[in-house]
Image (cartoon, rainbow, N blue to C red; front, side):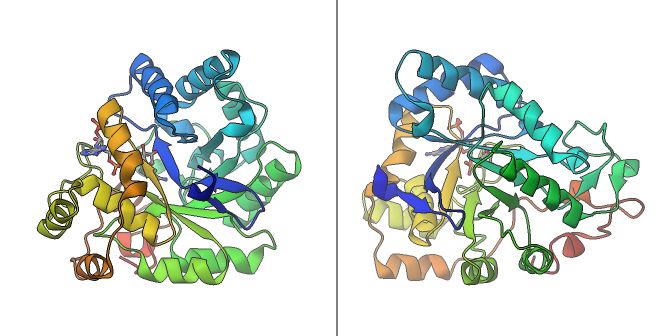
Length: 315
Ligand SMILES: NC(=O)c1ccc[n+]([C@@H]2O[C@H](COP(=O)([O-])OP(=O)(O)OC[C@H]3O[C@@H](n4cnc5c(N)ncnc54)[C@H](OP(=O)(O)O)[C@@H]3O)[C@@H](O)[C@H]2O)c1
């Protein structure tokens, strides 16, 4: 498993295969069971967020497994995220997350979106009047405090464009360890990977299959003829091709499956070897961003009037 890890600029190592825990509708028992199964399959990196509502389930299953001696805390890499309503006070938000997961520290704490919301906005789709002026500098100072206090081992961001990454680097001497973004064969993030790579920031791929089965997701990636034909050539599956593509680009992949067979299938993508011509064919696939972030854009209180502004024209 060791070679399937990456060393981050903050000095810690992170497993490249991560287990996503967002599901809708959310069911605590189903999520707990999925995490216990994922541990059996070999997943050691778990991705949660306050706004997914899955922190308690993740914590309960991981603590159960630790109590039974199946894993030690050090074997696990746990990521959670700062919601927009907590930009005012990341330390208190992370302390609450730690109570939710019943752990003393997280491995990674990410700014979920470059969006600041009113303190009471504990729901995923903000209302028109819920936004505040973005102040990433003060949020990032709070994130740094989390790190200094030992509440997490590394800090990072999510859904940041190249422009926002550059701006963050201008105002802070602590670079993010990770930028977690949508990335798959139809949203390759070429420019962002270049920018992040130049600054030693690891790009982590969420929705690496394009989120088939999610209300907002798409089957465009796994159903794409290019992906399907590479999969059949290697006697593998479309999901394995998509995941191996992300790994081949040096990214970690955060894939969600609560089905044990598909958990195994996804983990086995490490064993697939894509040839140069497969990578070339994937390079030719059209681009299609699936998580566009319309819910964070409005004409009144959001600092972003259009999705182009949200992504700094990188869409
Ligand atoms: N930072 C952010 O803003 C952000 C945004 C979105 C997601 N995320 C993180 O990334 C994780 C994954 O993203 P995602 O759930 O949107 O997308 P995804 O992992 O690309 O897709 C998940 C969907 O694909 C299905 N699936 C999984 N493996 C499969 C396979 N081998 N073949 C066919 N279908 C398969 C799953 O269903 P089954 O469960 O039935 O297998 C589920 O419906 C989330 O859980 C979350 O932790 C972060």
